[in-house]
Amino acid sequence: AYLLMKTRIFLLVCCMMNLSVFSQEQKMSASEITSFKATVEKEAKNIKSLKTDFVQYKHLDFLSKDIETSGKMYFKQPNLLNWQYTKPYQYSIVFKNNKVYINDQGNKSTVDAKSKMFEKINKLIVGSVSGNMFDDKEFTITYFKNKDFNIVKLTPKTAAIKKYINQIDLHFPMSDTTVSEVKLTEPSGDFTRIVFKNKQLNAKIDDSIFTN
Image (cartoon, rainbow, N blue to C red; front, side, top):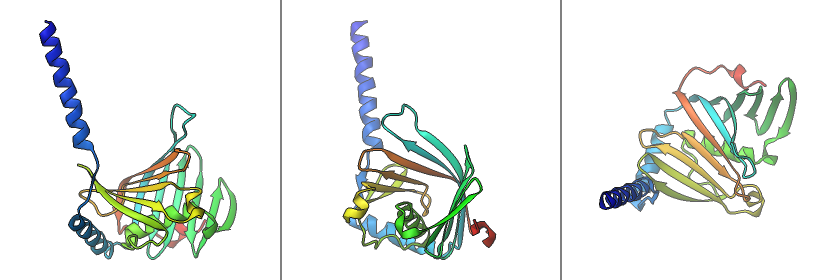
């Protein structure tokens, strides 16, 4: 019985080790990077709009459970974007003409987009959809993969961005050329993770969606 128990423990440890290796990220080779970038850029040329549900998870070390919000995101070429939070509250952020239009449950305001770190995420989302994300001068870009995703990691170069952002991870499913998940890690280690679901490419989106 003792020998059987040791055998089972050994097999369990082996399975856990194999699972860890199987799910581990690996750096892409130079040829894989070239192929991935070319595919994203080629497919992006056919994307005129994107509509998707999203769930956002805000992780704070002092909380035992992530703060969860959800809503819809709308994108329309060349650079119209609306983050529309619907649960647990009504809140929308529209990026248009280098400005951010905020509607906080009926309280409206406008700010310069360049003053907001969230604009960086906006720029990368738009870039990933339009295929223009790989030459960003403000970030060092590295490429990884695991069994499910191609992963683009962006590390800021400037002190102004480093103050707010330690790293941005963009996850592309192996079967897709648009981002399915964004993870924004702050210098403190806290992070925001946004997961996109039910994506619709080239769905008709009325311009009124981007009027806040």
